[in-house]
Image 1 (cartoon, one colour):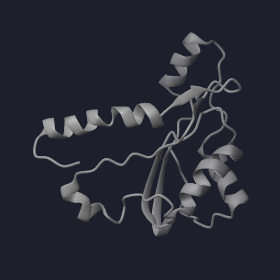
Image 2 (cartoon, rainbow, N blue to C red):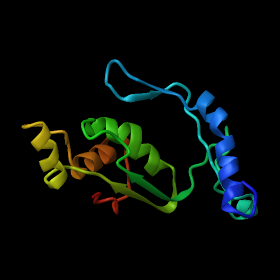
Image 3 (spheres, rainbow, N blue to C red):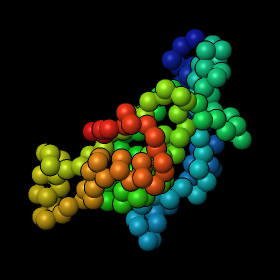
Image 4 (cartoon, rainbow, N blue to C red):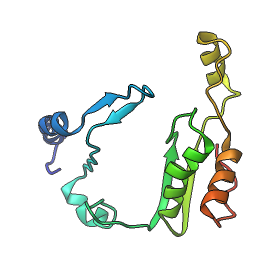
Length: 155
């Protein structure tokens, strides 16, 4: 984006509406009830004046890199998903995208907190948290040969 004022940026963001309406569509899976994206799209807004600072981190179509210094994964999967799914589809690919010395910060709810109390007040007996961080890390390490021994905890 370019400009000097918030109004300039707001205009450019509003101008994205036709693009988003055409390309950023989702429907509900009849099987799982989850959102299913018809055509996944990545939108990377940034200030043109900062492009030189961001040039190395702006994703480019078709350019595959695995050299991230930091990945923050906050609730990147459904709580009910199996540890195998979480490891195979989320944690291992993110960990494998790290540069040497890179860090993956995983934020994962596992119940036993006020959030679970709220869920159970609405749906008594509901247990949405299928596994904890140890299950996910164990699965990631065993299935994907993760050799990073410093990946010992997720919260």
